[in-house]
Length: 330
Image (tube, rainbow, N blue to C red; front, side, top):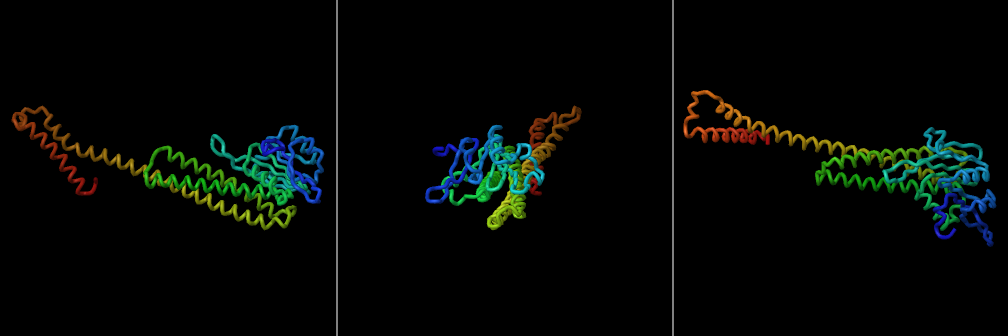
């Protein structure tokens, strides 16, 4: 196919093509008739993106294997995530994808069937697109299904690392808003909660990969020469888990800081109302006394009575404020 049109095809087949000099290069086909004419041992990778019933049936008949249903791919049991039968390794993993509504884990299935890799997925994934470009550009480096599988996993782990770094930058921005701007808007708390959910989601995603790589390391079917790369990958996954734990703890700290600052602000407001109430209690008492209807109240008939009452009220409020200031209650 011309250009990068193969990235938009639903069924992609990567196969070895012999050159006149005796070397082999990797070529791509999206035509089922052309794929049917190829020898099974020459085909490296079949990728099904939202494969139709016809395409699924074609792959199953051509390569004598059974593909996963979406329900099987989404199961969380260990036996559903990784299993081996003679000549075949079955793997179901979750890849984190961004949608208009947020983030979610999308199941991706891998079948290592003899020299062939079969992948099934329902969404576009950048790690797959990058893997395809690399095969097209540097096919000589990826001429086995195991090499392609590891490349896809390595690329996905790198994307997860980039994603964690992006989350860390967002968390740092939230921290700055709290520490410098003292932003206590409800939207900020919702953002903190959102990143907690995303962090838990990506942790679940990384733990899933850790379990799969650990299972591969115990496998007798996987080529021994790939074990060094697998050990590096599992160390990378372990470091990502540490990073997710750090992000989660930092978000929890920011959430507690937000709630603590909110309590302080509410305490200040309560304190203001309390002070205002106490300051106006003496004037209220004085006004209540002079509001009583007793006949023998000499101030009521004096010309200075009204100014005297006002002065007494102001003085009582001032003395109350002075007393609060002196005891550092304001």
